[in-house]
Image 1 (spheres, rainbow, N blue to C red):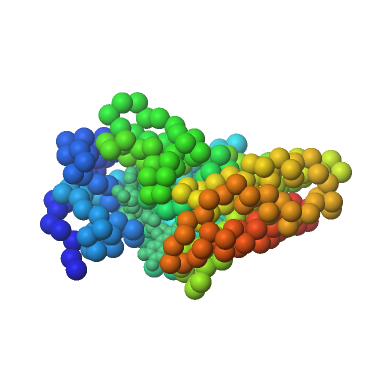
Image 2: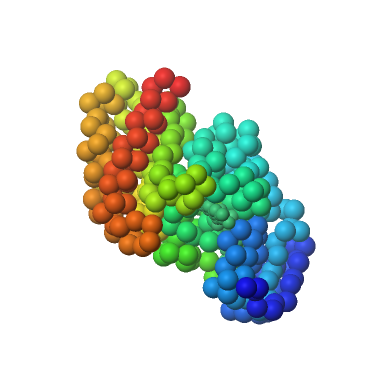
Length: 290
Ligand SMILES: Cc1cc2nc3c(=O)[nH]c(=O)nc-3n(C[C@H](O)[C@H](O)[C@H](O)COP(=O)(O)OP(=O)(O)OC[C@H]3O[C@@H](n4cnc5c(N)ncnc54)[C@H](O)[C@@H]3O)c2cc1C
């Protein structure tokens, strides 16, 4: 099958892209790397009368490190972000999540912003954004605004972006101190979307106590989730006394995973327990020993 006919626009600036989106309203869609949108259009599961290709807007492709945060332009290709030295040093969780995305062909075209705007609940970059409390920057006809990741993802394939807004950047906080980071997920075949997974960041303080921990879950709900009860239970505990399996059970306790051809909710939860426990174990190991 082929996509339904559409008009193609290739703006040179974000302002031009916003004007084009505003002019055509619901009939227009942003095109980034095309790795999700183009197959959906070819299968006629998505339709757009106007495609607004951001590919020419070089100003949306960058990685900028500051003392306490790293900004990643929305059109930064996933593979470039995955090998960026600033991201590797300052936001290791993002660098570690990217190799789990599809295949290298997908990562060479797919963008960091496109992954978030697409909002697949099994996607890795949205889970990292929610776990690290990243902020997503959007530009529309008004002033640019910063949206906390927890408010950006509203449901499956749905975000709080307005129809005339372009996602322009992601701002990731840097975790200082003795911190460790890990991603664990299970997929039926290499390159497939995860059935379920967990991403984890942890900081150790005095006496090897867990000073700060964030656990994110993917594939276990309509949006990427934070395991708040598990985080509360782990915080303040000495790393050696922690029962990671118990934390894993707490992490998935309140989840409502999808029931689809890939897995039942019960199976996703079981996988989630194991992935959360393994991600936490690996992150603690790194925080303790580097
Ligand atoms: C075989 C295959 C396997 C894959 N496996 C995985 C996987 O395991 N994990 C994973 O996370 N992803 C996976 N993907 C999806 C991939 O990561 C996509 O790159 C990503 O979901 C979308 O990014 P994109 O840049 O290609 O966006 P596009 O496909 O161009 O756009 C996706 C959606 O986001 C909107 N959009 C894109 N950018 C913006 C923006 N800046 N502002 C506003 N709206 C925007 C578009 O309008 C569209 O609705 C896979 C894809 C394929 C084809």
